[in-house]
Length: 530
Image 1 (cartoon, rainbow, N blue to C red):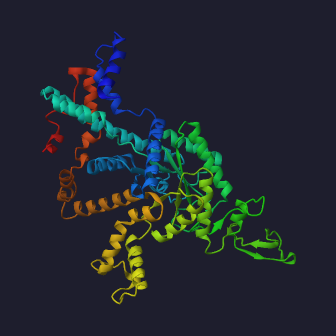
Image 2: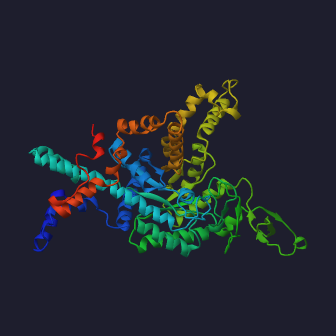
Image 3: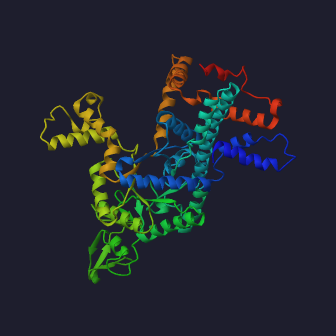
């Protein structure tokens, strides 16, 4: 609906209610436009369609990859999207990522926790709801400014400017974008996964990422000690999430199936198998086993048969079973194919380094079975990007026979190499990594899981060093406020960002001329108008 048609619709309703004195149709229309999403399900349906369209665009041209940054607070997500609109004019292809790691570390009532699914399971959908609350407030704030500009143009008799603003309102692009939300390993069995998935979706999440680790043994993907589950167990959770989407009417909802098999050498279960070569048998084929005779079987041992032979899987004192070394990539490929065959939409392969060749090699194998396979990829802060890419360049130069006498591969992180040709080439590879990986490794969506965790720490350290040192107040003014003003950071007017002007608008709607508004001439925020 256009701005004028929204006013007209509100006016018709008001006209039928003779006792609704003082209710203005245009004010109602403005409030409706400022809050166009009434429920989280409205958001999930809207953003799911966006992701589906973006996936189709990527299939047509890998240059159409998408991106996101992980945000641990609604304000952080809001400021990110405001920044994107300011710098690029559109939110297209830019999402939010919600990291379970950051919820555990920053949002648990227990205090900071490691990424082991010990935090309250409902704290994650609560953050989805918080993020969308802040994004909707960003819409209300920006539209409120447009409405005030419209009133000013009308008051000044500038009909052309008023029409331009109305057209801009009609074509307004919301800050509300898809969230890819981390549900860890489902926080329990398939039923628990289903119940929690509904909470995520009702909060607005259109895309849930689930991993194939054992729920009660869950580890961060970049740490040791990961334990995977057989495919049937993981598929049951994928189905549980799909049922949650379908029950709530979000039929376009997306599931990202993450495999940790590349770094996980353990399993808690021997998979159930019905026939030779079935998915359970394939899973078990990677177990580290030794052939035994009947006379060698000890008390309480577990045995399996394989090709007519009696095999003893290697069982650890933890009661876990060990996979054969060097099978990680093969298991990743198998995991991905079976996830896509059973309802997943996108894949996530947790790797130990950002290497296009390694990722692309696995994707090529997956696409032999599933041609449209696409990845969500973690451009993780757990990688030392500088060292990794300098070593990749070093290895490429070594293979090409170049002179490397001026470099020590083990010390390439040193600042001494920052001005070298090798460092420059490594930085260029980092700069173009996302574009190259989208083209060569099937990566549809690039994200950084924990960037705002690190930026908050870095900026706070810089401010504390200056403010509590010799710079005193200049440490804040020069390093923060002056930069906000000169870079056009919206929250320099923090009262406005917190909703003061929206509140003033409502006061005027409710009380008319009697409204006591905060935005008068003595409001110190006016100092930032210049």
